Image (cartoon, helix red, strand yellow):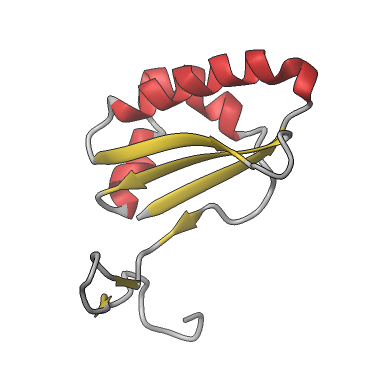
Length: 113
């Protein structure tokens, strides 16, 4: 499961933002089910940032948000992200030189597919 939180950060507060983002990433990385994460910045516009994390499952991510350190350092930062969907399930993947592997959705079957 992939989580992407996008931010628009003015250049004059970027140092404070990156310090807070590093603390949030550290807190998230300590939680069970965390696989990897990155803080990235757009090449074309240095005001645009993204905190990208990968998790074993939706449940692992949701449980991680309840951890004390994540509540203290991560949740306040994530609340400042652009208001848009941020959690994505992987439905297809491919390794270098490999074939596409399709994965079934974890979403419940029903009218809201």
